[in-house]
Length: 119
Image (tube, rainbow, N blue to C red; front, side, top):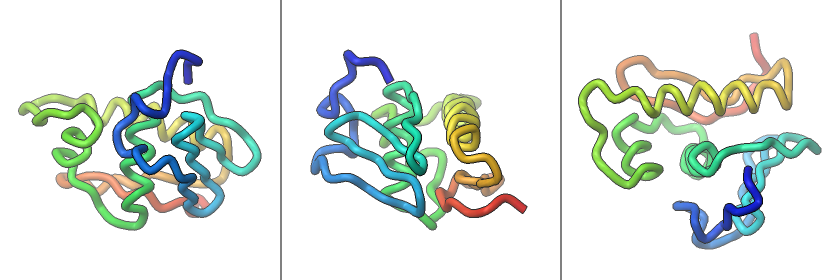
C-alpha cells in the first residue's frame, strides 16, 4: 500500500478497529494488512476489497454487492473488475501464507472469505 493512502480514504474502515479472521489482521487506521507476522502490500482497492470480505467472513458476498461497497457504484454487465482484483488479492495473501486458501469463488454468485489450509 502506498504511503499516501490514509485509512479515512477507505470504505468500510470507519470504526478504525483492527479486524481479525484466523491469522489475517486488518488495521484500518494504518491501512495495513498482516498475514501472520508478515505485512502484505496492497493497493487501496485491494485493501478495501479485503476489508469488505473480512467483515462478512464465512459468508458468500455477491459480486454486485462487493462492487458497490468497494467501487461505490453499480456493477455493469460484463465488468470483470471484481474478478481481477480478487485474483490479485488472492495471489498476495497466498504468497504471504503458502499452503492456505483465503478467498473462495462461488461461481455465478460471488466470493467468500474463509482462511483455511489448502487441500
